[in-house]
Amino acid sequence: MKIVVIGGSGLIGSKLVGRLRQGGHEVVAASPKSGVNTLTREGLAEALADAEVVVDVANSPSFEDKAVLAFFETSGRNLLAAEAAADVRHHVALSVVGTERLLESGYFRAKMAQENLIKASGIPYTIVRATQFFEFVGWIAQSGTAGQTVRLPPALFQPIASDDVAAALADVALAKPANGMVEVAGPEAVRLTDLVADFLKITGDTRQVIPDVVARYYGVEINDRSLTPDANARLGPTRYKDWLSRNAARAA
Image (cartoon, rainbow, N blue to C red):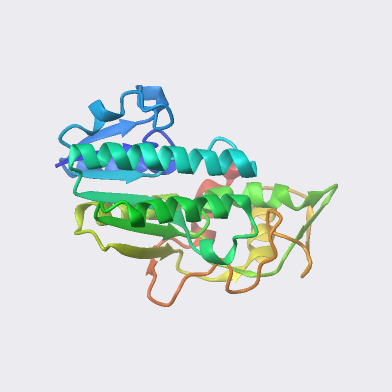
């Protein structure tokens, strides 16, 4: 089976490509680095020739409201049109748990626009919504930092290892299209402030985490439901503290 991974050189894409190739599949790791650009359509038709499945894990290089919307709309339209022309049988896209609850954010409005394009395309699809990745906790800490303090909302979080996201995407890519959503998350729900405090402690960072119910998560007000999955979500096996103990030096 030929599978094209859009964003195949990134964190999730590179892991997914490796998993699928280990399974004996023909995999194209498509990205601007390999001459495939979904914004300009360069190399797109050639990459999709004879493909049965396309997995889109590409992300916008800019999170500014207009830029991120333009990226997901332009990339999405070009990719879906190329897939229709190539008779692709299954479109898989990576999105974010809670997207519809976070539309105050330009990024999540853009992800919702991407999802809506997929649903309207007529191509059989599965949208995989994942919670935040363990690898991004350091960036979350930085987003709430002022001096030596980190102010964040103490909302529930259920983050997941990127390896577990890649494993879920590989399974979905090889399955029949759901024509709907699949959620994936880590095995444990924890307070965001506790998560970040553990990260800072194990990486030797002296910043102090201050729970603040009025603090925002990347500019968005969140609560315990905002970023947590539904009860039927697929749960990855990797626990955050186990992952952090193995990756502390790299995560710092």
